[in-house]
Every structure is written in structure tokens, then in C-alpha cells.
Length: 365
Image (tube, rainbow, N blue to C red; front, side, top):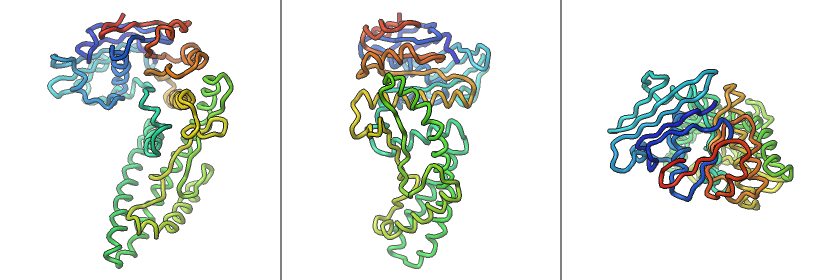
């Protein structure tokens, strides 16, 4: 998958223009707040989703303008394709190969990308809910039905939590708890099986990428921290059995707290470098390298699934990385089209193959 041309009109602070990227690595450099991230965001929108910065579409329209329009020519599915996105007057329009489409979902079938932004460092630094969202979102790209499982599980958790509070006042409701537990273990076991299976696939390419980034000095591992005593080699029946025991064992605590304290909704991931927790003891560079390895591994799994390499978007990735780690990202991520933003002019000088774009006040050269 290769972006051959990107066009932008009235998009954020970018001056109306078009660029023809390299099929290899593209470095976009300039001072802060000049529009570097806006370029990456424009490409990301063609994945069919929303801004990776959480922005609404009306916030992407340039000041004093009434609409924005993006266009892209790209190689995908063994042919050149084109797509356009326009937004104005609270209406979004999508065209694919000249045909207007009713939904952005059509874009997901022909274009994909993996993005790293500084916010992704929260995978290491913040609480477990961020890490659960990461793995759940990644699995959803591979299995559409997984989103349905998550929704169903959350509904059951909400019902069980409400029941736990009601039982304090109405003890006769105690007998109904087993019914909710039975439903919860059935769906919860499926969620955990999907997570364990995905982690098994993610772990090896993440290990290999991190070895490359660290010049073979560091080994990255990803550990699933289960609150219910399950393990990654458990089959679905064993997972369900262990979940049942965990819900029973935590019942008194759950009554006291008024919520369900164990299960997939409370589980976590731990990232370790050379056996040591990155979140607790890793340097800024190690934390950034670990997340980068995860993102590159995510790209590998998408390639295995779709037989098409996604575009890799790396926003402000080079800061806090030493020269050898920068060199790996700029020159040794093979067979992918990569877009990298940075502030330092010296970063672009490390690039051996590819293109360099300078951006100032929204003007791209």
C-alpha cells in the first residue's frame, strides 16, 4: 500500500497544495505548530476512522472557510486507486474511484495505516484501561464480531453491578446472581481467548522490532496480567471454569464495593525489557521504543491478515531516541511506506533513501 499523491484544500492550517511522497521513508520537518501532524492526520482519515487526535471534523476546517477537501491517489489491491473526503455544513462526503459512497467504511476495505503519536506513550504511562483499549481496538481490526462481544460483556457487567447494589436492600435477589455470572463467564472467556491469541501473534514481531531498535541490546516481552488466575494456554472451557471460580471467590468483596472486581474488564498488560517493567523502571527512550515496537508489530499483523502492507505514520517519534534508534526507524523499517515528523534538521540528514518535506506556516516544500 503506497500513497502516491496527497491533496489538501482548506484543511487546518495547511496551504492548499499537493505532495507526491516517496514509496520509502518521508521525513516531514519544521518547527512546532507548523502543520506537520496535520499532514499525518490527513492520511489517517483515509483509513475510514476519526482523527487520531480526537478532533471533530468541523475543527479541521481552515479558519474563515466553510469546508475542507482531501484527495489521495494510492496503490492498493494491485492497482492505483483514488479517494476523496469532503466536509462542510455538517455533512461528510466520501468518493472512492470517482463513485460517491454512503459511508467511510468503504475506505477501510482498500486503505489502512498504523499511527504512532505522543499520546500513545500513555500505553506505558497511564492506567490499565488504556492498555485494554489498545488490545481490544487491535483485535477489532481482525475480528468484526469481537466488538459485539465487548458490548455484550459490558452490558452484563452493568447489570451485575446494579444487582450487587440492589442485593444489599433486597436479599431475595441473591439467587439471580448466578444467572448473570453464568452469562458473564461465557462471554468473558471468549474475550480472554481472543486477547491471549492476539498477544501470542503480537509478541514475536514486537520482540524482533525491539531488538532492531535497540541494536540487539534489549528484549521486549508482553505479559497479560489476569485478575482471575487464567493463563494464555488455557482453552475456552478452562478459561470459563477459572472465571467462575474467581467470581465466586470475590463475591463478598463485590457485595461490599458494589461492583465486579475481577474479569477481563479489570485485566492489564505489562511490558518488560530484559525482564524489568518498562512502566516502572524504563527510561523515556525505552518507553518510546517499546510502544514503537508494538505499533510496528501491529502493522505486521495487519499485513498477514490483508496481504497488504499498511502505511506507517510516526508523529514526533525521534525525540528522546539516541542516534542508533533513530537510524533504525529512518533506514531499516523495510518494505513499508513511512511518514515521520520531526523538529530537528539533523534528523533528516540521517535519511539514506526517501524524501524530505519542510513545512513552515502550513506551506509544504
